[in-house]
Image (cartoon, rainbow, N blue to C red):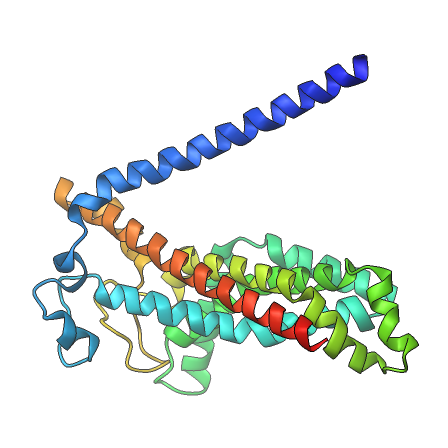
Length: 294
């Protein structure tokens, strides 16, 4: 009787906390929609510039968010592309090849790296830019490439840990079947373990995408500016939606400018949603394809 009552109490509290969390998220999204939807439109993104001319790169947008949207996309894609090979490789090493003692040491190091504040990583990226500018080339300064490298460094622990946990959590029968049939360790990893763990690995990548899209502290110190336009190269400065939201919320002149900040929030959420959906589709396709081959 006492056990049944405890189970019911725990179930009720779990349901209540889930409902509270869902209500808070719903209120937050509803508030952003209430504030941002009225200002959403072509003028918010493109200003007075013709949208097709702006998309084709024939005209610059001076009074819209299009450069910030493009800068955010470039930043997210570049930083994710830089972090993926290193993060997945390190996660595979920790899960499959590292001796127990080395695995514990590296794991502890990556846990510390995950806890470093983003402003510290931004300061490190700024210091790297200053060092390169002074000792290698005067053309190098805080730019898109430095920001992407700093963000890649920021999200590496998420990718490493998600890859490691995804591989280590595979059941023993899956691990032993291929070697029992004569497969080498590398063949077992490539053709069996990674395909079965791919779903959880991609989930970590999705979290990394969101982390890259929302961070402001890193990019403030490594290359983002308010009116840079669309970056023409990796060494160019750029605009980004997180910095625009921060800038406009701290220095708005009237309610109309603040409402543009809410509109920028909705655009940023939309970009993240699109990236998450695309990543989810890739995850589903790759998982099905890999398991089908197995």
